[in-house]
Length: 46
Image (cartoon, rainbow, N blue to C red; front, side):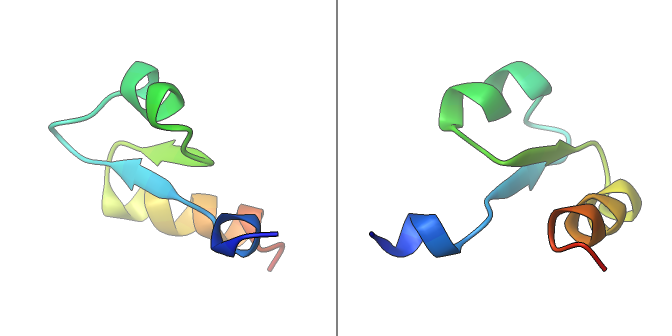
C-alpha cells in the first residue's frame, strides 16, 4: 500500500474540467473552492 491509498486527490479550478480530473485519476473535481470544501466533507464523511 502506497501513499496514494491514504490520500484523496481533489483537483479543480479554471484550468481543469471533469474529463481531465478523471484522466489524472482524481478522487474528485470542483469548479470552485466552495464546492471543493463540500466535496472534501463528503469524501471524509463529516
